[in-house]
Image (cartoon, rainbow over all chains, first blue to last red; front, side):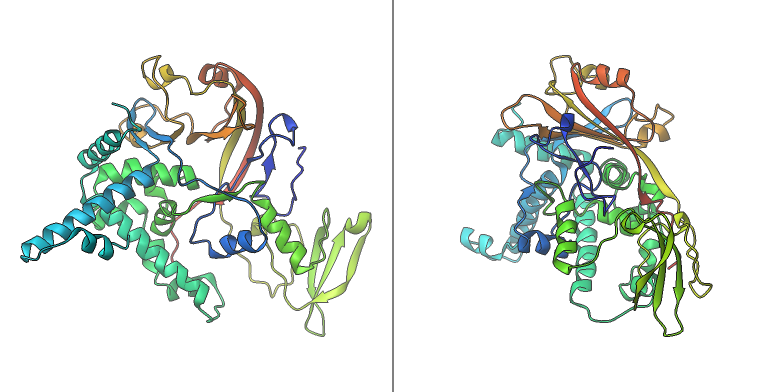
Amino acid sequence: MDCPSHPIVTGSTVVYPYNDTSLKPAELGASIFVDANKNLVRAAKEFNLDVISFEDGNEQLGVWDGSTILVTVRVILYAVRSFLTRFRRWERVASLERFGKILSCSGATATDHQ
Amino acid sequence: MGESSFFGKIWENIKLLWRYGYRSPMTTTALVKQMIDTYLSLYSTVTQWDSVESVSSALNFTDIVAQDSATYLAAQGVGDAFAYEIVESATRVNYGHNLDKIHALEGMCSMAANGAKGIKKGNYHVFKRFLKVSKANVHLNTLVTALHYTPEGRWALRTKGDAGSANEVTLPETYDSVILAAPYHTLTMNLPPSVAPVVPVEYVHLHVTLLSTTSPSANPEYFGLDPADTVPHMMLTTAQGIRAGGPAPEFNSMSYHGRIAPGRDEWVVKIFSEKRIDDQWLSNMFTNVGWVHRKEVNLFPSSLLRDF
């Protein structure tokens, strides 16, 4: 295989479309790491490596069972998180109202650390 | 309804809430957070361990590596629809496993995608820099044929092919510690009997197909959609169809990974599958296929349940 990358970590190799290194490299294996991978996050920062975020994608995600697309959402974790945050806020408002407290908008924002 | 509009987003949330309820996604999120918080403690811990078993036990992971994710989620009150459609789509794309065949720690890890990122020029740059900064001596294309313990209590290595040498030689350096960073059963080197053998681990065998296409979307008809519809750019899969006696998805995941160059209407697509994806399949899925690169990989161990 014509591979310009370092063959040290076989799980982390890129290939270039048409073997043209002027094009965007594509990861063959492990394509992402996350915030919880603190050493990788720190290494990327200390080594000054350009990082691409896959979080703010507005892309659609579907779940296929072999015959039907069961569900289609915008990147699922984002979607789940955004609706959870919203509902958590509602829940908090609802429970506070139950205790007869008055909640100002700014208060709601200040207590929401999600 | 325009999915990108404000109302589109609300509509999407209502759809999800309707399908999965409130409790299942909430509980899953809480379980993932709990797992991550425990895992993060590793970065600030100075304790040392002698085995994977003792790390697992110290982090209280013993229970969750001993049960499969399906059983675990059900016991925590997560509904089947959310577990088998959402969490399973994550376990299949991340680890090539169905929900009932992956232990709960790995299952929760599959859902931990907060802050997903990659190095623009390739993640291998991180490891390349690690080597450079550490000033390690790297011996590429060198086979270690034997390891032995010297009378001075240090490790010595016999190698073949070092610096182009055809003969088997003992390296002049000796070492305090040696890390075997390869699946144990694939090692061909002679080890002293004092090295305790590692139980062989099976690996998930997957086919990676990378391709470029000028089609902005996969074939909607393949997915039973209207020809004018756009197929989601990231298609994940569940084994729910197989469980109901239907056909297995022909791939584990299929995702568009952006343009091959800025402003050029040609995209890179990556497919993970259990079987080889042939050219005919590709040309049915993407009308115009440019470049194709296939590789078979054993990316991760088969996550059978662990008794530690």
